[in-house]
Length: 356
Ligand code: IPM
Ligand code: MG
Image 1 (tube, rainbow, N blue to C red):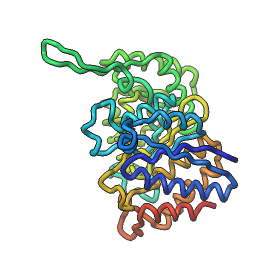
Image 2: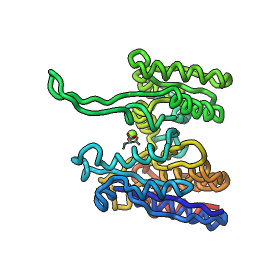
Image 3: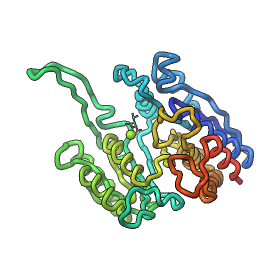
Image 4: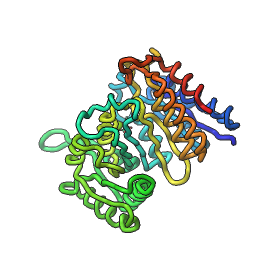
C-alpha cells in the first residue's frame, strides 16, 4: 500500500534518530511491498532559525495532508531566552492543538533484556508495564494565561480548565485500552483541592459505568507519584490530565531505566496520529552518533500498528528490536558490562537488517 508520512526531525538528536526510523521503515517497505512517501518538515528551533516561527503554517498543512506524522524532538538551550510564545516547545503545543491530538499514549515498560537498568531494586521490576494516557489538548496547557498588575506587584496566571466533553473522550480511550491490557484504570487528579479535578473524577466515574469489566480507582497526584516509586507494578492504565500526565509520564519512564527505549503516540478521532520518542532533544550528545534510536524506531512501529493498520509489519519491527537487544547490542545509555557498544547508525542498520 501507499502511505504519505510527514516527517519532522526537529532539533538536537532528533534528525539522527528519525533517520534510523526511516531506514527501518524503508526496509519494511521493501520487504512487505509498501511505499512510504515522505515529506520533510520544519518545526521547533530549526524552524525558528529558518523562518522565525517555531511552527510554520505549511508544516501544519502538510501534516493534515498526510496519513501520520513522525517527529524526533524539539528544543535546546540555544532558544531558551526567547519569549514564551516563540519557543520551540510552542511547535509541539501547536501541532497537538491544530491536529486535534487529544490522547497521548506513553507506555512505560521494563525490557526483559534491560532489567538491570531498572532503577528500583525492590519488588518484581519485570512486572512494570504501565500505559500513561495523558489528555493532551486541554487543561492548564491550553487555558487562559497572562499577566496583570496587583497590589502585590505583577501577577501571572495560568488556568486549568476542563469540560465534560474533553474528559469523556479521553476517559473512553483509557477504558478501551485497559480492556486490551489488564483491565485496570487508575485516574489521577487533585480532587481534594481543584474544582476541575472534581469534575474530572465525576465524569470518569460516570463513564466507567459503561465499562463494568474494567476496575477503576482514583488517586491524588501526590500519592500517585509516591505509589509509582513504591510499587509500580500495581498500575496498568494511568488516566490523567495534561499537566499531571506530563510529570507522571516522565517519572514512569525513568523508573524503567529505559527512557531511550520508550515510544509515544498522540491520537485524535480517526486513525491519524503523531508518533515521537518520549525522550527529548539531548543537545549535549547531538551529532555524535551516540543517541539511542530505538525509541523512535518503536514509535514508527506504533505508527504502523495504530494509524496504518499494518500489524504484521509493526510486529516485525518490534521483533527486530528485541533481537538486537538479545544479541547484546547497546547504545551508551543502556550499555552494561559484556555487551557490545554501538552508535546510532549502527543500531539503525542492525534493526533494519533483522526485519523479515
Ligand atoms: C512532553 C514535553 C512537552 C510537554 C514540552 C516540551 C512542551 O515535556 O512532551 O512531555 O510539556 O508536553
Ligand atoms: Mg514532558
